[in-house]
Length: 173
Image 1 (tube, rainbow, N blue to C red):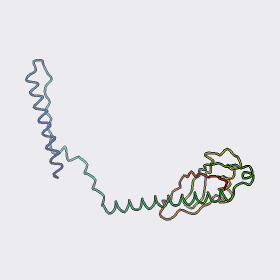
Image 2: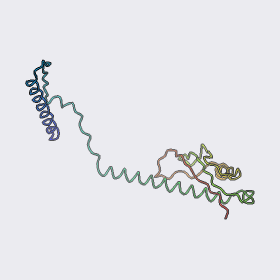
Image 3: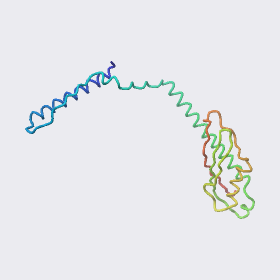
Image 4: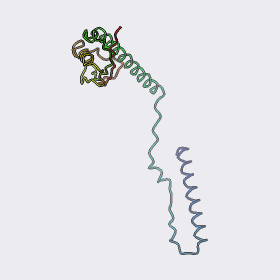
């Protein structure tokens, strides 16, 4: 038996002994009729059914998993930052002429699902600007300029789709 199991068993037996002694003392002091005392036998066999504790994972394996998770997170942050910068450049490059003439500025938030191969799906306008021209121009960046396609995920990123919200800022310069 392991030391931890032995210590646990001894502690349980001490508590049972203490409780039994207290109950007997109360029964002898009580003048009223009390129900008969039921004795419980605790054996070591009862504790053989306890599940074995799970072994601690190897420290090196934990470090490798943490390093891989960190690399994946960093790759995803860099990838999404590059995407946001790309969209921002396209927004300024394709600023609607009529909106420029009217001095229209605003912010639009797009949301979409990005597949590991770079394909863009489920494009939505989440937060519109006050100007229809800017809203349509933001959607057209994905629809026309990018043709619903961006770069495939880097190898460090998990190969599962991600949902992205990207602000598109239209600012006259």
